[in-house]
Image (cartoon, rainbow, N blue to C red; front, side, top):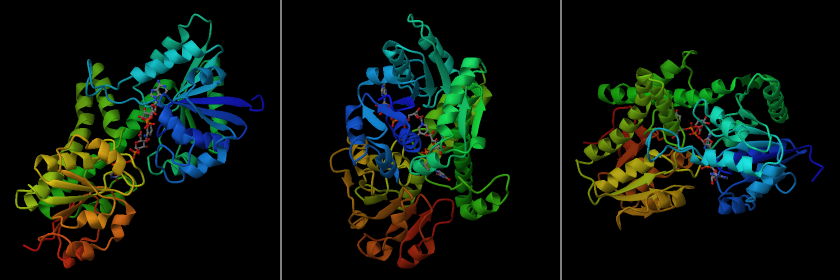
Length: 460
Ligand code: NAD
Ligand code: UGA
């Protein structure tokens, strides 16, 4: 394969590794790009048109390069040996055991990867942290890699990923910025230049930002913390709106018009989900605690606490509104994914809502256009008969006492709510956890409507 100018590898072919490498391969046809993963099924699926993750526009990008200069493999050792630049994009979930359990990131997959790289390498390499990691992880990575006895030299860079699920392709194609952290040594700068050259194939040079490694690592955690903090801030205000008859949408509009605050990422909701916000904030909290910065830790921890509060508050509103009991009531959950345009249900608010309703002995009917398989896996331990999975939202609504919108899928904006109302038990309720429906119109149909952060519209 000598015809390729560079050989790039990504270890970890998940939500980040797959789409990111597909974009690199599509935009850099003269580079060989290989994605490896320990999960053989995932690698198999990447080679078909049923990709392992759902992401609008992803298949088209994969198809531009697959078989030309984009390859998928489970032969990790061989791929490491061939590559000059190795991105590491393995998962870094919250630790569930031992020291730091429930807060610190579990770095076992990360560390295993470093050791595998050392074992399989016969030449010097650039290793790029793509996963989100605690500040100063690169130091540990460098120690493991450079304590090899083969005389090999590994240069570590931090290149955190800022894409969001559901818009990954757009985010990769037109990133707000690409961040590259490196050492200011001749080798560090040379490695950084290689990475800059890859991104410069499609990202304007002024949007490729460089920094030291520690700042790059911390910028990723801080970025997610700031984004999540905006949601918790507006969600905390939504609780006050519900008590005072103020309208959170009006408040958001008014404050968002201040250019210093801005409009984006200020939508009140049932609570943020996804695999990263909670884990990354808890990771930040853990680092702060480990440096004795307890006040800083408590500040960021409150972002997660408000989110937990918001999810629980939503269920409490449902139960109170439905005459303090939902036992044996059929309740349709419209959406289970943590946001629209993804099948991902990790940390989805819907999961907590479903579990709480099941605890209350309701019969929960889950519908979602893409996430039903994941929802089934998430709720596999639910007691017999307590959960039904239904692709068709109209069938989900039939015979239900309530609808709860938990994911902002576009299709839910334009359902025939009159037909749904007619097929439901009365009084019928809508709990709009995303404020995407026309509340006045639903009220006029006959629903009792409970939005987020607005006074309810009731018939009694
Ligand atoms: P993911 O779980 O979808 O994918 C990770 C993949 O790594 C899995 O397929 C797993 O099998 C593989 N893997 C684990 N250990 C391995 C090993 N030793 N060798 C080879 N493969 C291995 O996770 P993700 O969502 O892609 O996230 C990866 C990292 O990127 C995390 O640190 C996350 O915080 C960060 N991140 C995620 C997003 C997102 O939107 N999901 C965005 C930005 C950053
Ligand atoms: C988030 C960040 O937006 C990305 O920049 C980052 O790369 C990524 O985490 C990561 O590190 O994994 P993601 O979790 O995929 O991306 O999706 P978001 O669009 O951020 O949504 C997260 C959650 O917040 C969703 O549940 C969403 O519905 C909710 N949200 C978002 C709100 O409740 N209100 C808003 O205004 C925006």
